[in-house]
Length: 91
Length: 133
Image (cartoon, rainbow over all chains, first blue to last red; front, side, top):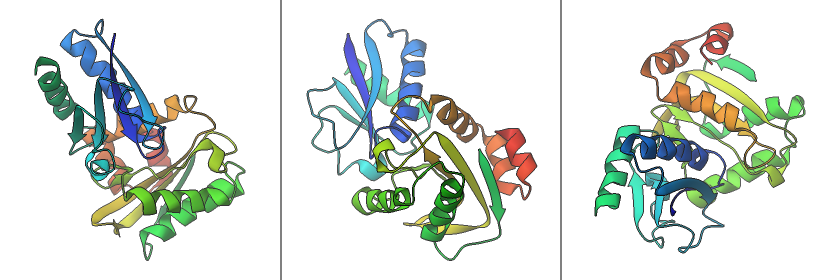
């Protein structure tokens, strides 16, 4: 199972919300049997924790060390998330 | 859940402090919870702005959160938060990493629904906000 991890400053607010959206997007894309979503904080995250990382624009610099990073301009925009996850999965 | 509608504040710190004071008065957080939120903002900026006009200040359970809780502070006049204009503060307290999922779902549901969001942003009435949530 591959992992997609949402990351935010405290690891329990916005990242948790984004995780909910990732789960929905994975279902919509029909890949929920291949990918699972989770969330964590910038303080705890290491680059080996997941295959794809997702964060918001405000944290893009703080998270720039993470590989395969998706940066969301609008944190709760599911369409943007879907597009960018699709790109990573197909890319 | 605690809801407050006020006309305006001088700066975003005041709005967050006011929200934390309400949570503290109701024994949801300790006073140091506000300091932890301030420290997070200093470290990472306004990252908990989750939608247009909406932010969700919070710290971590170990930062003085006593139980799960939410204070909704609606400003009739938006305030600047690092270049973003904010008029709704969802100040959140979580006692662990998972149990506040229900509260987050409520907030996310409102933030992803333009109609509900507009009602809250334009409402001057606590009961109306409560109903939408």
